[in-house]
Image 1 (cartoon, one colour):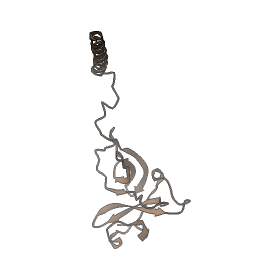
Image 2 (tube, helix red, strand yellow; image 1 turned 60 degrees about the vertical axis):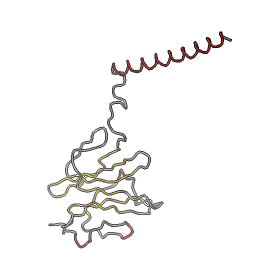
Image 3 (cartoon, one colour; image 1 turned 90 degrees about the vertical axis):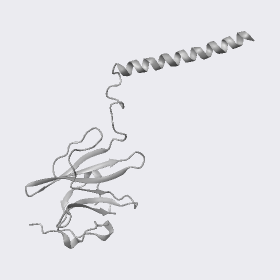
Image 4 (cartoon, one colour; image 1 turned 120 degrees about the vertical axis):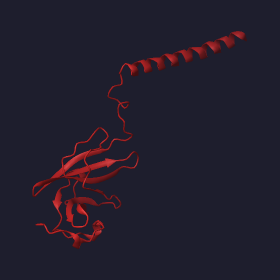
Length: 174
């Protein structure tokens, strides 16, 4: 009976010694920098995917359209408009503030991005608006959207236009 207890104690002590040894190796490797460039160096919980997809040359200015996907479980995709070419860190953040951002609508099946409009408003400044289509030959992947000047394009009520009044847009020459 006693020999069975000694065997059990010896087995538990062996397992504890193996676990402590593995833990010690992990700590030593971590302290020596073996995990450099892994998730230990990434300060973000979730890194966003960001990509500059198009640019629009307007007068003496270049506007940059950025496609961003973020989120841990529920992914959210949207466009951002920048007045300067943004650079992004490992988390997908930029030091530059976007002029505007607009979430891509994923509510309805079969709806695709057609193009992204830039509208200049007196009241709200430069704003983005997305035009959608249900025609496969007109739609593009979000990373292939084209940024176009939208002041001369009539809004489509089905596209859920922004909250500003369309009469508030400036003339293309102003």
